[in-house]
Image (cartoon, rainbow, N blue to C red; front, side):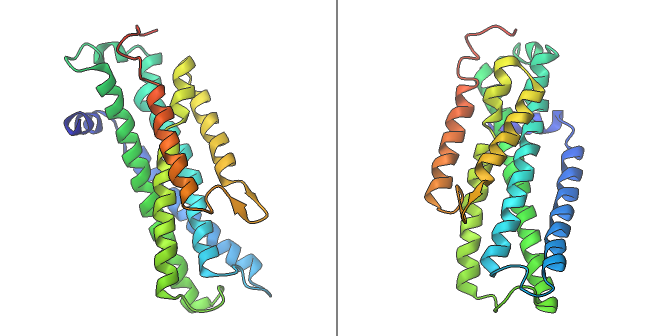
Length: 229
């Protein structure tokens, strides 16, 4: 499987994704600074360090879930639309393994980008706060560690959830459907009602992550038995 993933990496031109990830990280960091600047006149911009870092993580996850849908569209959906997947299926490898390699590459790129982007933005927030004090109190090591673990679990869950659009995209081999479904997932997962969101509890993201993997698997479970439409 690792060999198939490496082959897929060589095949795909990923410079656009890396550039996009850098730009997204800069924009997220700028947005967080804008919040601190516009709301920091009287009351603190953020209630606590947990609040600030959680918002940063939420922004990163939302952006890269949509990025993941674009990856899945390029890796899989477009190959079905252009019929180039037929050539790929002539290789002496199970179709399911070929699709899984593409899916796992998208998962790895999404998780890596989310994790690195979240880390950079959180470090930037802590560094800026040391000079401008837009977050009340002092960052305590145990609080930062606990928040970091939460963000890691939520990031892994979001990366798994980002595979769900593949299920909808594969039904009609539609790129717009894949991307629109990712936006809907972002809205549902990021929805916050009276301070409670689907990402508040660690257990919920873990369950959602497993559900995401299962739904993604359902999208290609019969690929070995069906003809390329």
